[in-house]
Structure formats: C-alpha cells, structure tokens
Image 1 (spheres, rainbow, N blue to C red):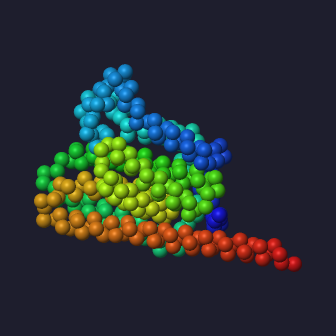
Image 2 (cartoon, rainbow, N blue to C red; image 1 turned 30 degrees about the horizontal axis):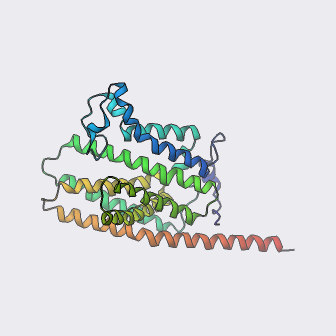
Image 3 (tube, rainbow, N blue to C red; image 1 turned 90 degrees about the vertical axis):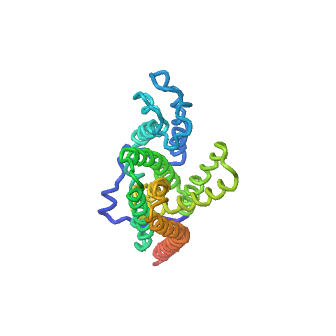
Length: 297
C-alpha cells in the first residue's frame, strides 16, 4: 500500500473533515451505488403525481428533452431525480467537502497541465461548433447543456467522488483507486448492449471510456472533482455541438481541436501510470527513512 504525502498545515485545516461526517469506506460507497441504481426507476411513479408514462420519452437521449408537460415529468425524470436523491445521500453522509477536494497537492505539478489542456481543447471546439451551426437555437443548446451537465455530474460525483474517497477510506492503494474507478466507469457502458448496441462499437466505447475515466481521475488529482466534471462534460458535449457544424467551413477547425483533445486524453493514461509509480517510490522512501530513524541509537 502507498501512503499519502504529509499535508501542509494550512491546507489540512482548510480541508479538515466535519467531525460528524461518516468515515469514507467501500460499504458506504456501496450505499451510494444502490441509490444511483434505483434512482432512474422513479420515472414509473410519475403518473401517480400527474406526470406521463416513461414510454412517452422513448428515444430522448438527454433524458430531459422529451415532451414533458407537467412539473412531475421534470421532477421524476431519471437525471433530475438522480441528482436530488444522490445529493440527499451525500448530505446525510456529510461528504461534500471530501468528494470535491484532494487532500494533497499533485506532485510534480506538471501533471496538472494535461487535464486543463484537454478541457480547453474540447471547450474551444464546442464553442466554435455551436457558433458555426446555421441558425442555432439558444434555448435548445442551453437545455442540452444543462441535461448533459446533469448526467456528467451524477457520473462524476459517483466515480471520481464517492468511489474514490470510499476506496481510500478503506485503505485501498492509490493505483487500485484509479484502476477500479476507471474500469468501473467503462464497464458501466456494457449496458448499451441491452439497448441494442453491437459488440464492436461497445468494445470501442469501453476502451474510450476507460481512457476518459483515467483523464477524469487525473483531473480530480490536479484540480478536484470539478476539473474532472469539466473534462467529462466538454468531451461529451462536443459530440452534440460538432454535429451542427458539419456543413460549415469551420468544421475542419472543430475536428482538429477534437483530435487534439483526444490525443491529450490518450496521454492521460501514461501520465497517470508515471504519477502513481513516482508516488509509490516516494512512499517507499518515506517508510525506509522512518525505519532508519527508528533504528538509530
């Protein structure tokens, strides 16, 4: 197991845990996962409160863009209710602070550049893609962005938030924290097979989402949960933003920026491995130095 480097006093005080917070463990993280899994099924109780049936939103890829005509349809949509229920669970656990911020600074700081550059490349591609779309609907773009952000928030607060702190709280080594959360995030997309996706595209998506999960893990280590959300959101929203600019002369620019972002995303894997190896070596040197001091007369 690797040990965390010592905190500087000022940062330790700023990120001190609430005395009433439950200590993060894998068991408590599993409670979150259970809530996460059951939340989408609340759509089926919407009719009891005046809403429409879930079937009326078939094909609604964003989960919030269907023909909702009542408040119940919005409140009991899978994304909206997931956010409400998950936020309630985290509030009860009093984990808001620990899932948002890293307890230690990333060393060396050069690794922090990669997720920031990835986000910048994707964000610029999104902006140009929307600007190059003929007669874009501001309301539709805004609604798509909100819906996409809701989905990303739920996924990131689960994998790079609760899962990360739960595994660390149960004393899992940091390399396994990265591997479990990134692989779990990727394997979650096997559910696409249930929706009719073919094997080849699903395997490709598993590989890509593992790389995306790794980039988000590195983003969390570099700037906390919200940088992980930014990496994830800009990557996902780019797919929608680029479609409207296909016939524009600027599509080549959008495509080039997307390629740059994907290359940076790919580089997150070797960067994360190198980072974890360096941290493991520092931890072993720290243990050896402590042993030498203990053996000294």
